[in-house]
Structure formats: C-alpha cells, structure tokens
Length: 420
Image 1 (tube, helix red, strand yellow):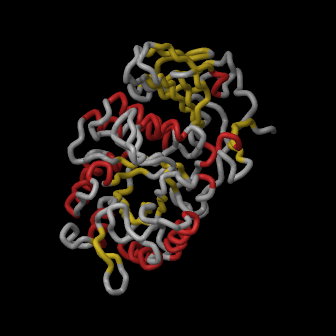
Image 2 (image 1 turned 120 degrees about the vertical axis):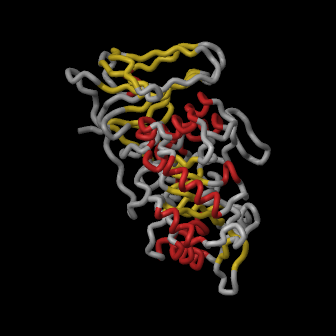
Image 3 (image 1 turned 135 degrees about the vertical axis):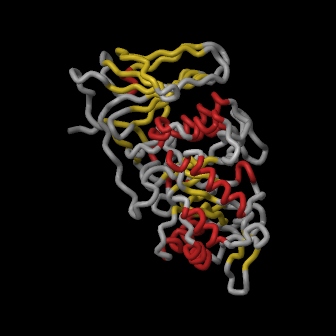
C-alpha cells in the first residue's frame, strides 16, 4: 500500500453554515475508549488534559477531552446521574473546571437506550435531567451511543436528546453513535453535529470482528459514497483515530490520518497521550494535513478513479486547492498517476507539487503527477497547487447536489459545475 496526499487550486462554492454555529469544522480532540475502555478515572483525564497541552496537540487544534463509557454508576433519588465516586472523587464539575482551565473543552458519554454498552445507566426517559446535569457541569460535547435500545426509533430518540441539549442554552456538540445502521447522514442534519457512519474501528489495517468491528481500509470503503452529506455543522464520523495504539505501522498510521483528513472527519485521538512516540506526535500534529481536515469549505473527499488496487481520491478546499490521495491497496509495485483534468484542472496546465509529510515542494509539473509504489505498507504525502495564471480553470465553481434525502447515496449525488 502506498498513499499520496496532494492538493490543487480551483474555485469552489461554500455550503451553508449550520444554524447553531457549532462544529463548523470537524471536531478535534481525544476520547478515552479506544485505549482505556472502562479503565477511566479523574487522574487519567487530568493527566491527558496536561498532555494535550504539553505535546502541542491543543495548539494544533485538538480541543475536546471526552470521557467515554463507565464514568457513571447509578441515579440518585431525584433521577440525576451519579459519577463513580471512587474513580472521580472530586466530581465531574471540578473535572470540567480543570479541563477548561487548560484552554480545552470537556465531553462526556451517554446512551439513548436504557443502559450504556457497558451496562451503566442510559438516558432513555431521562433526557431532560441529563442534559441539564451536563450543562450544569460545564459539558461541551456529548457522545450518545445506541446500545440497549431495542424497540426504539433512532429518529425520535436522538431528536429527544438534541432538543434537551438545546433547551439548556449551553452550546454542546452532539455526537450520534448508532454505527450508521439507519443511514443517519440522510436525516440527522439539524439533530446532531456528527454521526457515526460505520461500525466500531479496530486497531488494524485490514481486519474485521464477528460483532462488527472493522479495520481502517474497510471503513475507508464505507465512506466513499457519503461525501454529499458532510458540511459545516454536520459531519460523517468514521470513528475515532487509532494512531499511536501499536496495531498500525507508521506508514499505515499516516495513511489512516490522511484519509480521515480527506474525509473531513472528526479527528478524535484514541491513544495514550502521556506516552507517545516521536512518530505518533508528528503524525497527530502535522498541521498541513490537519489543515486539509479543518478546511473551511467543509467538503468531504470522494473517490474519482478506481482501477482495482489503484485509486485516486480528491477533496476540494476553500482556497481553490484540491487534496488528493493516490492509493495503492496492493502489495505489488505500481505506478499511480493523476491527471489534472481528473480533478478539475486544465489538462495542459501546471501545478506546484508539495509533499505534506516531508513538508517540501516536489516541483512544478504539467498535466499530471505520477509516483511509484514498491508495494507494501508505504506512505508518501504530497500537495499540488495551481501555479499558472495564463489558463484559468474551466467551468467555474463546484458544488454537491442531492436529489432525495431518502435515496441511496450513490444514485442521488454527483459533482457538477455551476453555470454562470
């Protein structure tokens, strides 16, 4: 496998902003689940907040510190959710205050069903009191799962919590986690700011679990048709990052991070930030790749060519650039090229090629860019930018079009040029 990340200049039209102004770019932060599961505590969260600052991740854009399942143990006589007093002796308000004092934002986890995935109290029929409790603590982000929800309608259950959160008056990013089962990309805009679009991620490149967990490459495939449904305030979420969790090689981790950036996906780290390798820090804080993810245009990248093991993926950017990944799935050596007309440029034009991982310009190329893969899990990132002003890009800006919110993504969306 070999991947290149690139960008080229062309004019793009911006989509509409979300009504409440939250999550105008994909949320960035950290979540406890991938690395720690139920082994969470006040000490871990404080140490992780410290690490977000000391490693430079906060300054690179990571804001939200989110505690996942297992922080809660019961409800009190008034129905209010109670945090584990052994693991969180100072209470959740004090923990939120600590996180906020670091210049970060604080997130918690709950479930739309009667119980969480780890059988802690869920929020079903307690949406209002839970939302008020979270707001009182100073919560800025809620991840809301879908376990133990038999017989419930996800449209209704998620809308209930969405209304409850908004009624508190506190700006709280709402992250739906029903694993893409009901195609939330088709109906959840206006309810949540992001929604899981796949099953749970696993710390491996190409693997799967009988219960639905999947490796990085399988999640990449499931994102391919979802590009029309992402935008400022409403993002497809292919799950949290596995960078730094030992199951991926450095090159696979760079590929994973690059695809999430191209997908305009939330960048939620899931590793132990207190003990990161140099490679892991460099990947998670690569500002040129992060800039692709956080681009203000808010368009998700899409596949523009598929030749079996060789693929070309492209994401439009707000300054007229393109981010492109050349992806060799196979282990055999292969040359992969992209021509300018495939990504909306004049065929004979010139572009400046930049490598986003070495952070150096490759050169000024005419018409196409080609790179050679020796096979295996290798990665190189690059960026192309339009350099010539003598031949303007043809056709004007691009946009997404979706004809029906209930039809399958592949048949209802396309890219087309605006007529002027």
